[in-house]
Length: 296
Ligand SMILES: Nc1nc2c(ncn2[C@@H]2O[C@H](COP(=O)(O)OP(=O)(O)OP(=O)(O)O)[C@@H](O)[C@H]2O)c(=O)[nH]1
Ligand SMILES: [Mg+2]
Image (cartoon, rainbow, N blue to C red; front, side):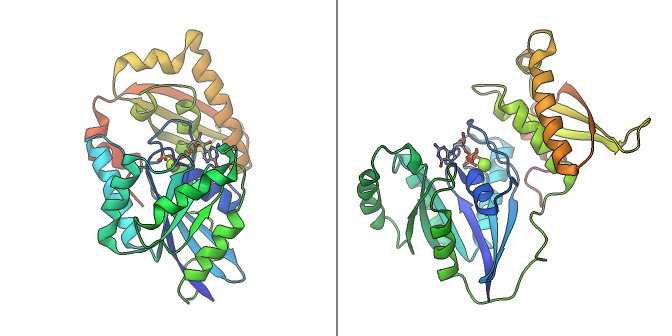
């Protein structure tokens, strides 16, 4: 039997969270068309008859110098350090300067790296992969190169085969029925954040955090769960972007979140959302750690 840790690393928006979800066949990590969304080291446990792979979804390397971004980089490096294999994600547009920089920063760990070229569904011809693969081989002694589409769940099986080829012998690291490491409260906060983030644009998504304030059985109906969450933003002028005209945007995002949380916990949910300004929260580790970012 084989087992080990496999971290998923790459620039923001390359599809890391989509990949861990595609591998597990269920959503453990939130996905957005906006960059720099993942803030938690997310663990996804994959079991098969060959063994157990513990995948680690990591934040994308954010390009700013906030304390949050620094903490995210520490999270990424600690995941890489703990890994038996690293999956380095590139997208089907090929190498960009920022991908090169990230790969450069990983070299000091001397890890076994599999190069994953994601978003192949965006290529009009598979031939376009060849120059990318050729151009990759001189950059690092990659164990293998696996093109795939996380979104279309295409070629995921080939990636798993490649991972098992290089994984060390070992016993299970986690119970077989454990899928992820995130406490339910944070999982709920992440679902809410995904819906809010996906209803905004430009630089707003990166300014949003979600904190669960209350999570308890409903007062009147004990079978219901009452959840009160604060949507934290770092400046006042974002408030109207999130809330929208007559509160419509927040209401729509809240409805989507409520439905997904109901599915997750198997109970009806009463969801109350409040928008709150916490100035400069991204530079206040005591605060963003309480949201779960950089923890676990
Ligand atoms: N066309 C296409 N889009 C994809 C694929 N995989 C991911 N995406 C899209 O790319 C965007 C980013 O996906 P994520 O999975 O959130 O990317 P990420 O690398 O986790 O991003 P950060 O957490 O911000 O670092 C989303 O809009 C996804 O739907 C793919 O295989 N094909
Ligand atoms: Mg992500």
